[in-house]
Length: 409
Length: 230
Image (cartoon, rainbow over all chains, first blue to last red; front, side, top):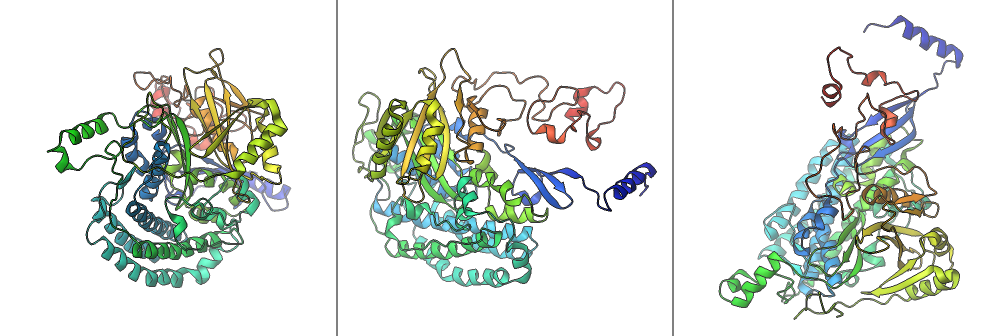
């Protein structure tokens, strides 16, 4: 490389002036195409050497206007938009949206639907945590974990495919119940998973939890104090890793969670390692919930009987005039919840996922707002990384588990 | 269930949803009425959720008081959003969802702002009470054009910095409008004055000259559009 004489002179002068250390900050862009920003996140980092002085997240690269689009869809059709926000946990989004619409309508769903929803949402939580575990470990150089996690995630996606025919954007949970009854073989597949997964979870623990390299890269790194986590509106494992035991499933039980016994893992240091451990232990608790829900899974209806909310079955449409009218009305116009507004909070794998729906009495949501957990958690990122080393930024981003589809919506 | 007789769907067979009682919401309303009297404009309960409408100017003080009240301790701002009721006066609802992790109290606060003469209304910020309000307020400014006063700089967050208009307003055109020409997608063209916002950090240095690594070949006959757009 050719060295510019004038530049070299400048550097030498600086060194002389400042006792051998050149004090100057430098601004670099991390992202939006950086592989470990987990999507299209751009961080504008001001560096002093390798230390981060200031970090400004720049979001909006994946802004798809889902909230605006929902205003021109009927409640029935806006469901499919919710899959595409947190695309690693579509069933949890479906569940939150369905609960909000049901609350707006003032209806309750049958027992079988409640249990099935909880089984599916907890499977989804494990699947989402597996992607988080694999990708955040990959960011820090542990490649084999990534492959193992995706191997187990396939087992869960197979169950979703069995239910809905789709692996990811299922829209299987809908306002009023489920799109279809749980298929034959569902229970067997879930029980297989329950049998296989605990040993696999131990494998991940063996690979990482006491691994010297992993502990060195995560313990005491990018600490977020409990006060800061609370002040910045963090939820989920980001809040619990800092020592605050807030889990919506316990604090404000929804959809039948109050019937199941499970614990909330809580960290104490608020570092990357604690957030990691909280999620690892959460997967075990999800297994407990699935086991209980599967054992108690009742038979019977899996949708409300009201044909104004859920479409009639196909065989009725072809033989019954009234069913045909209901079918036509639902798909063309939809139902009209009464005037009012509701906010429903649920615990998605990332934290508190809230749906705010305002109805003007029409068949389309007058306003749908999504309180995305990743949006709030990302807000606390500068607080975590300012003062730490550049190399720890990837550890911090991995540890708050953001999905940009949800941040930008 | 309560239905709006004129517009709501009449449900036939659906079981009714049981809404849990929220005793602390009543205490919250009583506390607000005691402390702020006339500033409490309206209290509505719907599906077990209590909404208190407040004078916009008293909002930060009310939030501060709710956060510090020993029997309520609303220490967590869950969400802020807005609704544009185009034909109504005042036009916008700004909606705050508060929560106490200690007492499990939940309340929704609402401030109504904006009228026909003032399409870009202002509202005092609650960032001093909960730092979490920062991004929510920026989002509302970006998508609704409601300005928040008494806080750090208010810039767009989701839309490009040079975007014109506020997309979640109900009168925002859904189709058939022109983007400013030429549209740079958030990147400030080098020849034009820089809009406020994040671009200032990376495209130009403090004295206004282009940063060396972003300087493009300055050739005769190569027009600005091709250079910056390529």
